[in-house]
Amino acid sequence: MLEVAAAQARITAALRPLPAETVPLQSALGRVLAADIVALRDQPPAAVSAMDGYAVRAVDTTAGGWLEVIGEVAAGQPARLRVQPGQAVRIFTGGLLPPGADAILIQEDAVAEGSRVRPKEAVSPGLFARERALDYGAGWVGLSAGQRLDPRHIGLAASLGAAWVEVRRQPRVGLLATGNELVLPGRSPAPHQISSSNSFTLGAMVEAWGGLPVDLGIAADEPAALAARLAAATGLDLLLTTGGASVGEHDLVRQVAGERGLELDFWKIRMRPGKPLIFGRIGEVPLLGLPGNPVSA
Image 1: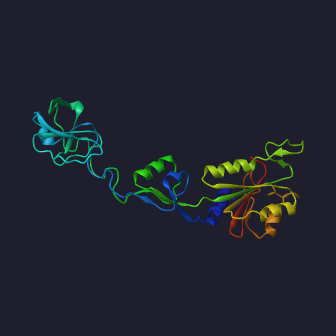
Image 2: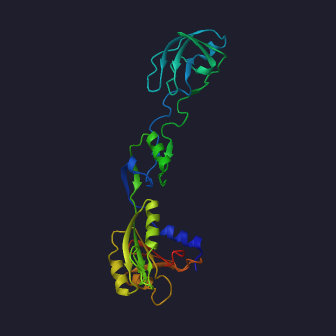
Image 3: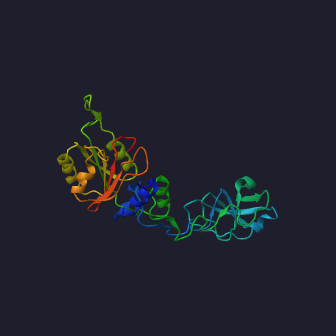
């Protein structure tokens, strides 16, 4: 009987990556990257101001004298002005550092008067200036293949300039419940019946993790009924069954799946509840046969 970790390892080793497809970034939430997303250019692409204030030459602030303000630059504007000795440029957060300037005199530390400004104290070179490629450089791998994309990753991919991303195709996961006692939610069960819940729980888990649940209904505890449901389970990447996995006379999944070519990898793991777990493959489709009790499943 397998330990849980060994069973997990064997299941993982038996699975194969799905083919890749390219989707628009806004449709990629929850998908798994099939290729790295790399930065197309430096960020920031040039030195920019981290604060509102004045772009200056640090050496000009040591004497504390007045500096001539020759213009301004805001975020999204090219830096057309060159700062000469004794000059400053009004600058706003995100604005490109003009040629000649090497520091930002923040407005809290400046005395402004008309078209001139005076520092309250000297600034050092590089102060409040974000240098080129401070965040990352061109070619930086921002997101690696295999990463499942959450909202933060979508934002990062957008900042890297990725309008389309290469992701793995969403797996189609078949969900087949077995048991004479099961009825669909919303129907009135007889005293000997219960509402089927496993397929709904597992389907929600599949969807939450980026898969496409395929409801295969409920199979009665009869070989012919189960065989018919398995025969209809086409176009899947994984098949999950619940119930019929143990040793009782009505536990038919191993038997009927075997008649349909199941190559059994293992049956039973060292865990309670959850011991009667079936894992194998019917053709190219992996099959996980889970116990019927919702806690065990």
